[in-house]
Length: 246
View (tube, rainbow, N blue to C red):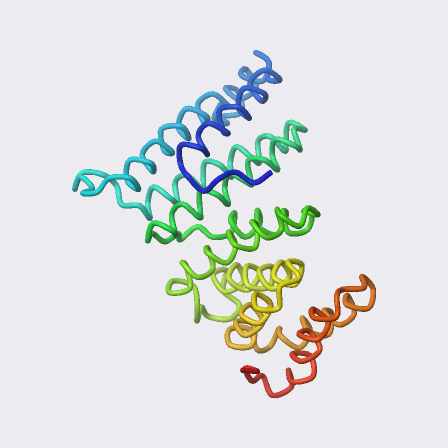
C-alpha cells in the first residue's frame, strides 16, 4: 500500500522497512561495505531519517529559518537517499522492501511538490512511478497512484516542460507523462483520461499516435467499460491532427 504523502508518516514507514533490512544484514555485510567503499546501510538510514526530519520542518514551518536549506534541495536529497536504499535492498535480494522504498520515494516527491517545491532529480521518481504502474492491480491504489503521479507532473511542469528532445530531462518527463496517461486509463474515469490525453497531445505529439493505437489494442484485449473505450476511440480517431478534443 502506498504511504501518505507526509514526511512524518514516510519516516515512520521507513523505520519499519529499515528494521527488516537491518535484521537481515550481517556483520559480514558491514565488512564488505567497508572494503568496497560502499556506504553502509545504517549510515544511509541515519542520513535519510535526518533528511526526512529536515523536510518535515521545512514543510510545516510557517516562517522557515533563513539558515534552513530550501525545500528543493532537501527534496532532491531525500529522493537520492531513498533511491540508494532501494537499490541496496534490490542488490541484497530484498525485492519487497525495495518496492516499498520506491513507494516512499513517490510519497516524498509528492510532499515536495504539494508544498510548492520542485525537484531536479526526476529519474528515480519516474522509475518508481513506472514500477508501481506496471504492478498495481488494486483499483483504489491505482487511483491513489494516479493522483500522486498527476500532482508530481503538475508540480514539475514549469521545470521540465519544453525540455530539449533527446535530453535526459525530456526522457524522464516523457516517461512520467506516458505513465500518468496509462494510470488515468486504468482509473476508468473519463475526466482523468481526457486531462492526461490532452497533455500527451500538447507535450508529446510524436508519442501520442502510438499511445492511442496501443490503447485501442488494450481496449479490445482487456474488455474495458464502454465509457473508457469511447474516450480512447475519440482520441485515437483524432490523433492525426494532434488537436485537443474539447
